[in-house]
Image (cartoon, rainbow, N blue to C red; front, side, top):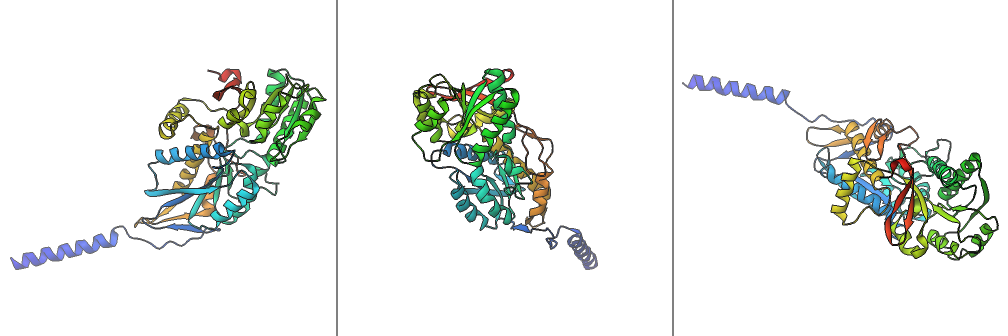
Length: 409
């Protein structure tokens, strides 16, 4: 009997040794990524940050994007590869100074994998040199300036992506709408000194002239300016039928109000862009907002409708801006790229190689997003945009889609 017991004990011991030899074990990982790896401990979170405008007159822009990201995190169950998502960030103020200050803070945190943002192109130009040098991936839901994804531009940096449209597309669409739908033949433009606004009005003007229209004046206002009378009087001398001013608040609202009382512009149509798609435009401009138009992205479909229902349930309001779906898609592209490149250890430790993550982002193809089927290129453009034009009515938000007609429900 004791002999049998000894045999059984020996067999169990041998089996245990075999299982130990063949079972899961942690193998040391050596990072060979050219710009390094982020090590995430077994119980540590995956840190994704934002750099968005969430305070001040343009806060609806960044808050709306942040809301979209929060819904994407909810839909992911709050985790990536079984690690809790840590989501926090900095306010960039929709300005170069704000972008630099926020970018400096974020770049100093080596736990960050990716940054969702920025809201405004001016923020990106100041923040992106810092975020890129830190090895981060950045993906913006609302940067639209062409130079940010132009590989020949000094403002283009490695690791930068966007789900927002390129303003080469928006400016051309706005010109098409004005000339072929409104049958406008004379237009003027205003920018606010930012490269975003200047480039966008320039694309509009070039396309409008190519269609056969006349640009009577291209002029500007300054950020912080409240009295627009001299600018509007200069425009009035050319008798334009439309003024296109793709700028931000509060200057945009002042132009809407004061154009209505400028001799010679009483019946001139007014049009902005996505920077003026906000309930604050309606609230600030008051009754003068009636008939004001904006060019902006157009997102429709059953998946988007389901997203909006989640937005209302979570935040108690309809979406407050236009880039929430782009932010949702941006987060999910980052998530998919992390899942593709992360090296998982048996104890739950993750290593995320930073250059491999950038490469995976650039290789994104046929991604099924709320904003369409998205494919990223090496320069960072991922959008598959449809541009619509929306019209404001006093006391009503959001504005009403009026073009293209085939998308009007």
